[in-house]
Image (tube, rainbow, N blue to C red; front, side):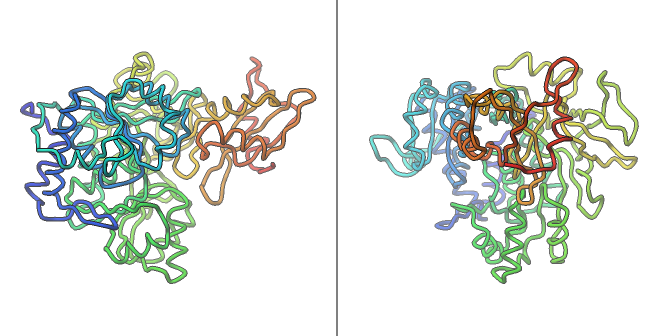
Length: 506
């Protein structure tokens, strides 16, 4: 390892020395100490190397949260390989695109996804082997054989090398991979742990998926601090609440409706949530108030992107309700106008960021990377304002990067619009975000029909759900005679939102 580098693999190695007998991972079936996990990581590392995996090679995995994610992640980091965690909620066509874009050498999958492997064949053309988590079976090697492999040694990896590619939401219908380095991940784990005050006594419940940056970041922060990561095979609010009580879970990440469901379980007497001291994420104000009324925990407001390792600004809700927090200790943030000139306090503008949390760029997208990182700043595409005390208030997205966030997922209207327009009955469409009582924000398609064509709202919703991940399909559809247009003939999105953004027809 270079003299001044500290990588993700070094977190695994350091924790085995410092917290060797403490529990690192805990599932419903077993517990794994930091010492045992590092031994597993070294075995998997040697097995990967025997398959030809080396610096810069991609290793993709399609799985829900499970303990095997950690030794595989640490092993790839030790070799300088790049992990590509695939969103398990995507449809085969979307997964196939991600695999074709990143060309993984190995592909690891959970057996519940075995049925879609034929649909992924084109994207897996670069893979020399497909490995299922668990035992050998179906003519394929199982991941258990990787765990049983004799231990290997790490390569000399620098912390500015890529560690993970997180596929982002699809701008203009095409997902792009955000490349995060070891330095990004290590810096963010220290950044988050120090700000929130996480220690080896904390326990984190992996409700958020590890294929999302929010879930990965929170898990790594607790892991780096020497705390426990608890994994559930499938999220259930009652079971989660009881687990929080039984195991003393002190920290969770949140997007609607997770906290609402946990509070409903608590109100029904299923759990107390007394151990839960920290909830970090996004939530409706009334739900935050419900949680804080319990008197045992604090809600952390936050703002971030995959491109900044998911956590840029944060603060306790009690400090500045309605804000997105203050820039963290490793973040240089400012608000700029269209000419990239810094604006005065309380003036809306684009949020731009620099510091060790800023990603390396988009995989295979040189021009887009240069445009996004122009002038030595990461241009987020988000619009916000800073008050006189440095608290960030999120205003929205720039028009070309408009984003809808149902339940914490990122959905770009252009991707949904592309799927809607594949229906032969649709003439034009504008997809917008609308208030949703359960998920915070919902997806609405405002459409015109071609002359003489007919389709019901429900038929169109199901049509779209068969082409992209179902969380991206519209929840409501409204058919109109014509969409409002701007002077150049393009759909006027602001007018569409003004006219149709509060209703939920269809």
